[in-house]
Image 1 (tube, rainbow, N blue to C red):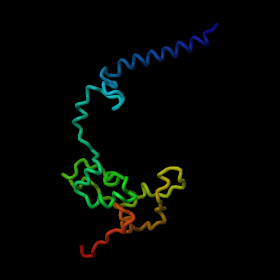
Image 2 (image 1 turned 180 degrees about the vertical axis):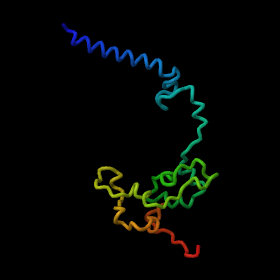
Image 3 (image 1 turned 180 degrees about the horizontal axis):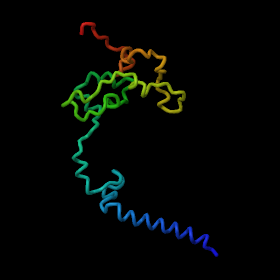
Image 4 (image 1 turned 90 degrees about the vertical axis):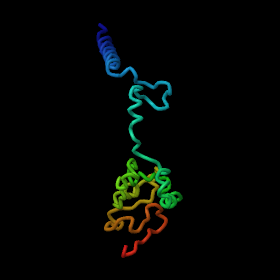
Length: 162
C-alpha cells in the first residue's frame, strides 16, 4: 500500500550506496587534505614531488623589475600600476634565456580587452575609461597616441632614421 513511498526511498538509498562504492574504487587512498588542512586544498600526497618539478610559468612584477627598472618606474604610479606585466606580455617562464618568449603586442585587441566601453558602472571594470574601437581611430595602433606603461604620459616619439 505504501510502496509509492518506499520504492523511491530504496532507489535513492541505492544511488547513494553506488556513489559511495564508486568513490572507494575511484578515489586514491592518498587523496585528501593531509596535515596542512585546507590551506592548499585537496590534493594527492603521492604526487607532490611531481608538482615540485614543474617549472613556474608566471613570474611577478618584481621579477621584471630586476632588468626593466625604467618600465617598472613608469607603470608603478600610473593607472596601470596594479596590472601585472604578464597580463599584457604573457608568461615570463623562459625569459630572459629566450627574449622572444615575451611578446610586445601592439594590437588594438590587447588594449580593448580592458578599455572597451561598457554601458554600466556597477563594477570596477565598468569604471575603466573605455572607447568604442570601431569609432576611436580604428586605423591606428593605440600605442601611436598612448604610452601603455603610463597612459597619462605621452608616448616617446621615435626618430625617423632609427
